[in-house]
Structure formats: C-alpha cells, structure tokens
Length: 172
Image 1 (cartoon, rainbow, N blue to C red):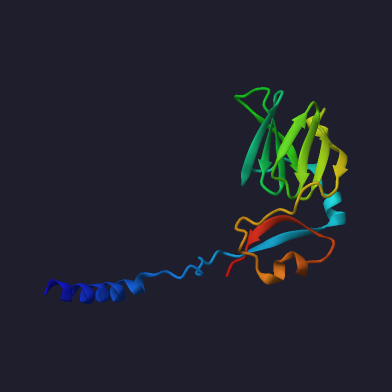
Image 2 (spheres, rainbow, N blue to C red):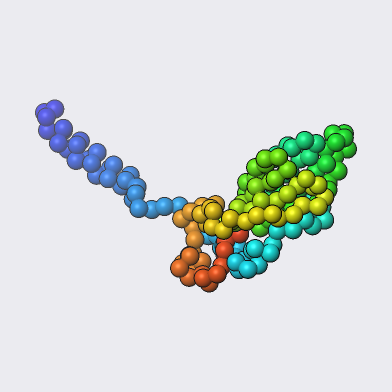
C-alpha cells in the first residue's frame, strides 16, 4: 500500500515545484545612463583654475604639505588651504572634466581628464597651470551600471571627436 503512494507523491511534488523555477535570462531593469560628451578640442582647453564653489559629490582626498585636494567626481578638484586646520580656506576649484583620480609628486599634480592624463604645476596652488597632457592614456569612463546604456548612446553612435567626461541618469 505504501509503495502506491510514492509515485503519486513524487508526481505531486514535481508538479508543485515546477512553478518555482526562475528564468535565468531575466535581469533586473537598471536605470539607463547617458554619457556626458565633450569635443576633443574643448576637452583639451577645459582645465582651468576657477573660483571656489560648494562641494557636492566628493570623492578622493589628497593631502600635500598644508593643502587638501578634494576630488569632485567627474568635475575637478577643490583646493583647500589647510595651514590653519581650525579655519580651512577654499583657494579655488581646479576644473578638470572627467576627473576621478589624482596623484602628486613634488609640485606636480597628475589627474585624469576623461581619457587624458594632465600634469598641473601646483608650486603656487592659487596659480595652477597645465604643463603636460598625454592623450588617450586611459580607457573611456565606464558608466555606473555597465549594462544600462541605451543604443543611441553607445560608442558606435556618438560623434567621432566626442569624449565621455561623465555619466548622467536618464529620467524615464
């Protein structure tokens, strides 16, 4: 009698559990991103020391002597005079589109300017000057969520002289 129920129970379990499988091809829908583009000519003229501005989307912090260099993701670097830590003074903002990383050696600051590497002389941080540029030193900036680029924004559909300097979420 007991052996009669085993096939019936097995068939019932198979039918009951068959609806629990998840399709592995289904992926969560991520919010799409649009590249922020800049022409190559504009990119090469874009690095400049501009007046200080409020910090919004900060990244890495670099300390050199009595100065703090605070990255503003994809936009540039805040220069803070920290001679008096009780009263830090915002010297200015070093506009570097596409910037996410920075390093220093001596008085030279090395920063990514989207796909380029720029060298900036900071012997006097209030008078920062670009002294070198290595074109295409880095790969294109990746989107925050790689699988979320809409077809019209993919590299093959962009102007040939365009450089990605950031990513912006598309509002649907």
